[in-house]
Length: 144
Length: 304
Image (tube, rainbow over all chains, first blue to last red):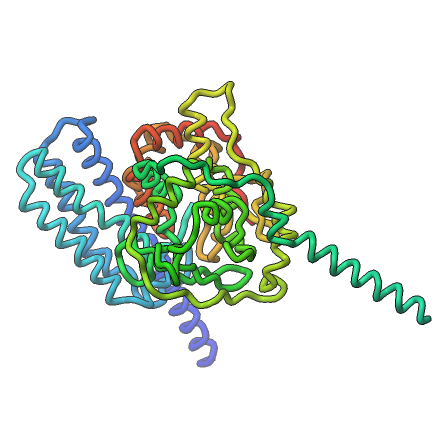
């Protein structure tokens, strides 16, 4: 009996761990989608497809700050398994990966300080979004 | 018995002779390949250098200057590991001692100045479409870049792929030797796009599935597939529902400019340096590439 209970407990813990891992992958994917949505808003203003609004511009940059702060915590050891396009480099070069997120965060915060109008937002937005491709180059595998 | 043995031996000799002739680099590289002469256009050479994505593979490993073409990158494939060579204008370790004709021959026929076959990891199957003028200009531009010392180690491939001579057969089957021919029924922009995508851009080399011999499966050209380095999957770039069928021309141009997809995802992995190159092309060239890509036959995503 005791053995069965133990077995069930182990199975439940295992399943929970697996579920948590799926969750963490889902969470970081959602976070990246949030970043994408912010970029859509920012790009529309930068390209003149939408009128510039300072409040909106600041929201775009604050979203990036949140994404950077949360994002770095969502790649725990073991979460390389599952439906993910995170590259092995995330775990092989942990320091480099954290540094990339730190730079993204610093650039976004800097942007929040310097953004006063469309011109200053253009500069900030350009600098911050360079981090996207820069990080994906090393830390994400190809995806369809 | 003795006669039979002689016959077998004779056949083996004839077979080996035929193999030797059929695989001769000189045979592959026969035909007119004189340099076009005239003064090279360095600005066009620079454009072709970026369109050709030379630095994505040949930039010196472990540093950020994309104009240092010392090579050294290890390309892991199903056939083994290719060590990308030095193509900086260093006279000993790079291509500094090459003539224009040597360069054109390498790009068109995949043959080195000392008459060896190159492996098609070097995408001469696409570069062969380029005009002699563009190749001349590209070579002239590379010669203006800093010479870098040092050679990459030799490739580390498994049998039978480690027999270079065998590439002669591969080329007979898969290298057609045809320069790009514009389609007069299509617009100038479409033709420019076709040239850039099929020739220097060599987009199909990654965005197509390959057969067991490493040649592109033509019926699925541009339909994506497994990544050649085994990591992840390469997107379908034909205008089908699981490709770029829902993208507008502007959205394709945006991707080639900033790396952002219509969902504002930012492309990564080996496509990131490609964007680094396409972002340096004239806007009209990116528009032309987009026009051509969106005119491709829609194909379902390849799974090989």
